[in-house]
Length: 178
View 1 (cartoon, one colour):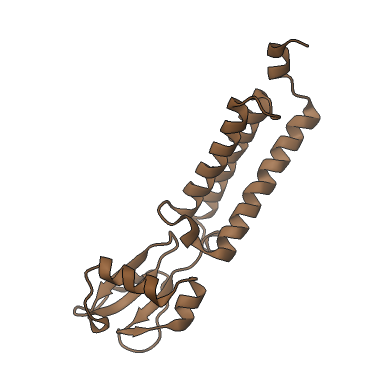
View 2: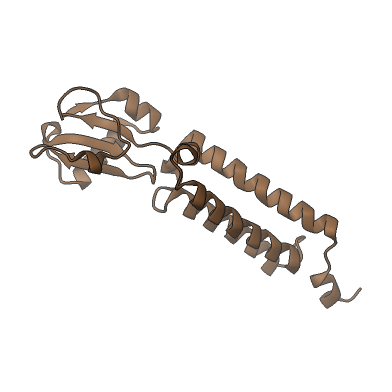
């Protein structure tokens, strides 16, 4: 078999294995990100970063002519894009979104650091302090609410005016003050 024929050779069994492997890896990545938190890949949205990492891995193997031949690589990439679109559509439904995306976690409520929130977000007090400084906070009393968002960033809302429930969305606060 010459190199060009070998490059494009893929059986139905191999194609099926590529699709199944791609789906399995995608689901494992989703589970790991869900378990370990979005901080791991916080600069992008969780699923954008996930797909970028996997696309790079698959493309790299195809470019280097490693085991997955070109059709297998194209099939894997296509499957990843299909999964990304499907998960994106599921995210529009509240129940599915709760499974796929981490819920916002309250870290500071009415100037009080919530250790349970820090623990759920896998965040230390030093990391929280850094986020508060980046938001221009000088004293905890200035913070009405600090929330660890599903994308791994921390939102900081200052004391003063009341917070519109529309802005809070699915954030659940303790009954301190609103």
